[in-house]
Amino acid sequence: MPFTTRDAHTALIVIDLQKGIAALPPQELARPAIANAVRLIETFRAHKQPVVLVNVIGGAPGRTDTKPAGNRPADWAELLPELGHSPDDIRISKKTWSAFTGTGLDARLRDLGVTGVVISGIATSMGVESTARFAHELGYNVALPVDAMTDANPEAHRRSVELLFPRIAETGTTDALIALLK
Image (tube, rainbow, N blue to C red; front, side, top):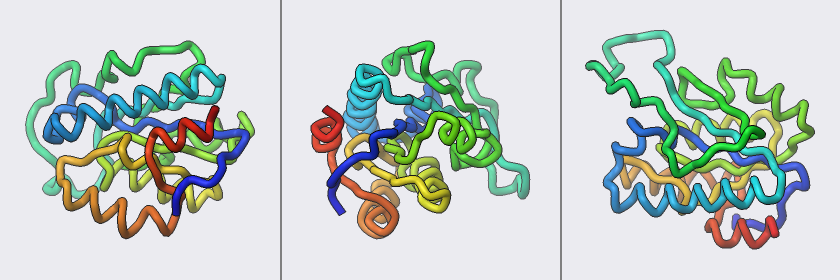
């Protein structure tokens, strides 16, 4: 379903646009998605709407044989510099795919009166999808600008965008969403 409206109290949640994750998808896919996420961040900040910047700092407990092995560079979890920084931003570090699991994000958003969320980032089929599913289940109105997200697996991205997202959210382009926000 395309974007039709936006809640007056909407927050932007930006998933895992950090140095280690943003380097994973092919850069011809990552660069435009990151640029669109930055446009959304700038628009939300300009309209004094909450911006949530999420990074992943570890993995969920459980089976360790399914987790990637190896040492990560020291700056792996650092947010991309092009995201900028505002003292009003909400910073969330997570250890699971969803930004809602074990982070207190739901309580922070509820305290601000947020009823809708826009979600962007990397990876569409993991962090973005998991956060969108949780947001939907928690009763938020979810909007997903599909050109402000990407995945290292283009088929996984396509499946999320075409099969799942229309069932739980409104979807569209960054331009269409920004037009609604203005």
